[in-house]
Length: 198
Image (cartoon, rainbow, N blue to C red; front, side):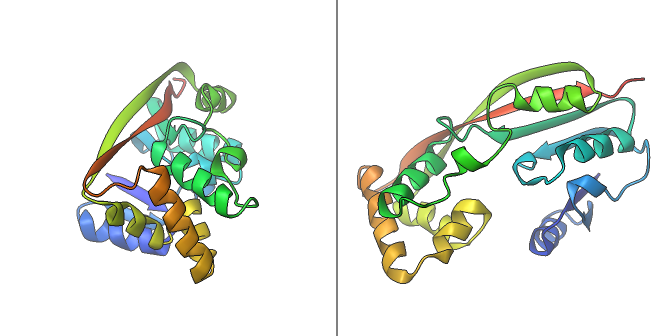
């Protein structure tokens, strides 16, 4: 089993958590593995951040053996991902220029991943949705995730001055119903898979 990610910190964390996995630093457009060396290629929450989706798809085909399967999923950012939808709605209330991911990210719409796989030359394409629920012990558990600065939401949060960040926190807390204990949020991911031609 192997993995790659362009972020050095993600590579280090993955290597530490899964010492039996070969983890390399690389972009999805330049997968650092040999031709026809895998039966499966998985891209989870990756396609938003790819600069050249077609090259990425061709790389996935290159490292797959004939008949191998590529699969990808991304959050449905428009309505299906409660945590991020609430965050960006709160951010837009505080800062009308906030870069709402639902408006700037590709691939989160239904059918977009299947179209990408088809364009990259995959066949036997199937698509579905995945739904998950996450329970937070308290509001602080959710908020601390944004303070880690990961992803567009975290990066935006940490780019704010302390006054704006405090206002964002208050707005998000209010939009969640001012929870005093645990609460749950749901999320939907659009996903598709395709087979590399024999």
